[in-house]
Image 1 (spheres, rainbow, N blue to C red):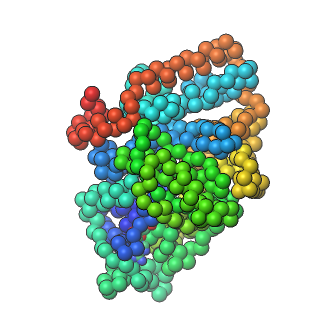
Image 2: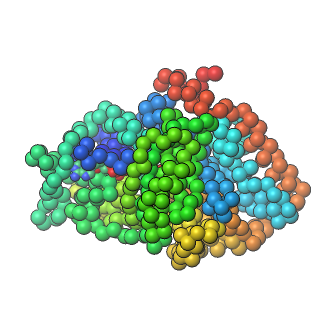
Image 3: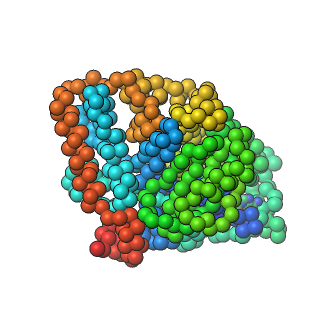
Length: 504
Ligand SMILES: Cc1cc2nc3c(=O)[nH]c(=O)nc-3n(C[C@H](O)[C@H](O)[C@H](O)COP(=O)(O)OP(=O)(O)OC[C@H]3O[C@@H](n4cnc5c(N)ncnc54)[C@H](O)[C@@H]3O)c2cc1C
């Protein structure tokens, strides 16, 4: 089998590095990219699953952070969503400590019903560390039931692609530079047999991975997998992006600030801050959106705002014939919860699970498509929740509040509203804790809580909550400043970093 990857953006090089490491010794892998076309150049915030991916590829963390000018991310801070003055964090990792048979938040709800006003974030190590701009990978107070903070990264997307390229080439992946002008197909099966470049070079293959970005060259244009449009729920269809100079402190969170017709991202890297305004063009002009972005930067702008246009949705089939699409070629869900890079990684995992052996089996293709469809739909529902449960007054937000949302989302919210219950199905990406933080953060509060939360008695519940808060505060107090920690880690050499010890 020979694999051909079409496209050298984050998706293409993620595929090349992972497949190169996993199967590069058995199967030849080639990648085609065009400098003339370039890459989308955004995609700087991630979720904790990226640690698994980087581990599979064999990236050393300190080297990776140096190469990509990366920083640590403990969650996403949402500003102005529930109402213009609201602020909450969707932090990674645990919230509180479970006790007995029921999740922690039922005890929190029990105490609230008696007037306790502690915030959910006070029970999250990642949230409390983020609020103080501190960070540490290891458990600063080992042996307690809270553990270490869960984290992900912010990085420069182009540098991430370049870093992965060095690893992919080390695993034997061969790169071709040039623009594909023709795609050859087998007359009978319709399978792609080769791609031809402007200069006439032909690259033949058995399995093609379409990472061609929004162009969707193979899965869309050639194989005809149609686009399933979700813009009735996720109406934002444009963005302006611009970097600005760094300011102190180096915050270990992505910030998502709701604005008149969408929201603005703020992603702090070592050397600059990435910013963008994601908006719906029915509710604000391009000029006004660009002005809003430029008026709301924390540092000096480092360029002119660059516009991107998109539609939320996915390809009907992610895998058709001998073409598997990854990244923007397979669909796009806006960056509100930093899920796109994760979906590339998840697609790769399922592809590796279903790697063809003697030709392509339609049952494998169907399984792949079912898994990815499920993942996309669950992420879609989670994103819609942010828009639907808003408390803002502008016309865009009113429309979001009034839209008809999928039944699957209504069920989830109603189950929570009645007795605070949240259920995660199958391999759904977002955990109960993610849903909990966003629902509470956007003022969806349950009418009641699980009856077992009364069992310990009020005084014990109060004591349990207080001791959890104290434990978290004690850990946070021992964590170093985020930038200081990052600089020390980046100064370590691979052998030192591998021990997970950061020199003092
Ligand atoms: C506004 C915005 C913000 C985003 N923010 C985030 C975020 O914070 N977190 C996150 O996880 N994701 C984010 N994403 C998504 C993320 O950028 C992408 O998922 C990721 O970068 C993968 O892109 P890609 O490789 O699929 O496409 P691209 O980067 O567009 O790469 C496409 C590749 O295909 C090549 N190509 C295309 N046509 C041809 C041809 N004819 N011949 C040869 N080569 C060709 C191009 O040269 C290029 O190498 C964001 C996306 C947008 C639009």
